Image (cartoon, rainbow, N blue to C red; front, side, top):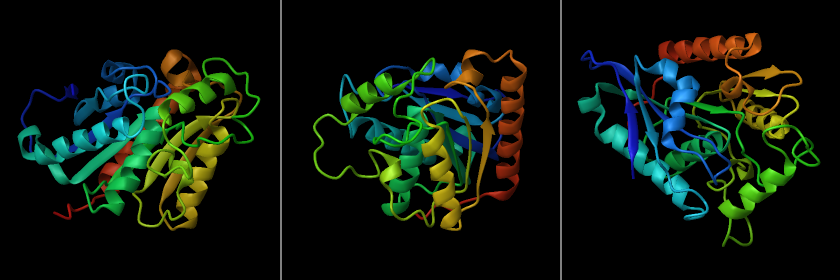
Length: 253
């Protein structure tokens, strides 16, 4: 698996390490999309972006397995990359946001890599229709595309869908990493993103969300020059800087 690593040239041993997972509805996208993402502003840190297997090549559990392997790589090479062991974070957009959330759940449940903070931006997190993902005809991503992406990703699964495949299936949110996200009200993932944050808060997990009225999916990546996109980027940076100062997670092993 290819890993795209963004890192400053100057040597350091005290950087935050971030695993950033690209979106694309599980069926498209590439690690290079990190250059379009908010993670590109984190290059003073160390950002690792995995070229995980897409659903057309290999459905679930291929993508989360690849993301787990990339996270383990980040942990095992922390010293080499100048990353502090107690501040490894994960994030991503859309399907990458769901993979980030599901990865946090998997690592907690298996005593794997300790994640200090999660940033699942407008995540494609619920495989079932919600009040905003059904009958949605917004630009960029809509109900038809959403159904196609989930069908390809979950191909071969039957019965109850595990939370590692669709993080919204989670029952117990306690002990998960603190979170930040943002979402727009016109896109399919509005309701499920709000619900995810509410579930974290109900379990006592610090979780923050910014909501942008009337905008479509991934507006910030597609029109970064707009004032609202710049505001979203500034808010993201502020939340990341706050997390750097306040959130740490010692590795269990």
